[in-house]
Length: 260
Image (cartoon, rainbow, N blue to C red; front, side):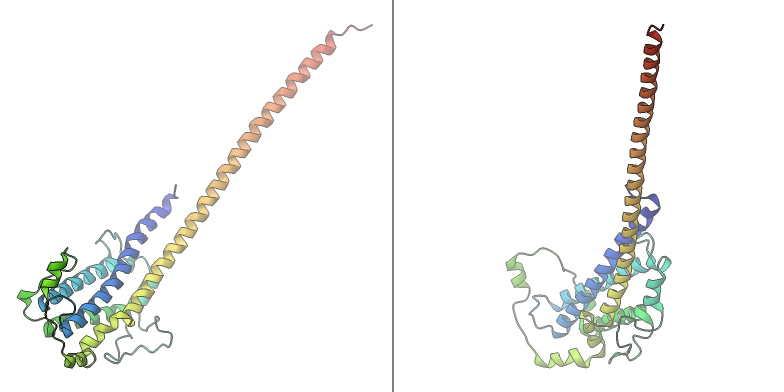
């Protein structure tokens, strides 16, 4: 039993927190696949086309999850956080970087990246992933998204058996501005900012559940009080009725006694 006025909030917070958490996982996936695409050395057991296709698919999922969290009407999220949470909007759209303790919002790749909130960072991240795909992805007609498809060990080993390590490509991880910015998705500003947004949503959920728990205990207490009151009220009435009955019997008995 849950108070009806909390049902809408509970339905809203569950799916949106789930998509916000998944959004952070997709950022890390983009960073991982970007590194594998730039190196393209065979250690990932994926071809260049498979890595690029999978990265493109992960990027599409990231856009979809981001849209669901912010605007809703997608992926079981009925109403986005933009319409319900002022604290979420402050983190996403206001200038500044509240996820940083030192208050320094600049990054080496984009000095002004952190001054316009997490939303601007997310747009820059997605644009950087697109730049990586255009630069290192090869022909788009060879992109294949096979991530998550079941494979036998033999099939996985047959995909890419040659290891072509090229040490010079390691320098691209730091020298290419778009690549370096995406690689910060492992622990950089965007992941931390998304984490702060997730914390805002989870704090709202914690407060909501605390209110629900309090009102449930209050309702249960009222129920017990009414139950005890009803029990003792009936017991009291029966006791009074019984006392009247015994009083009448005593009066009748006294009237039956002979007097002189």
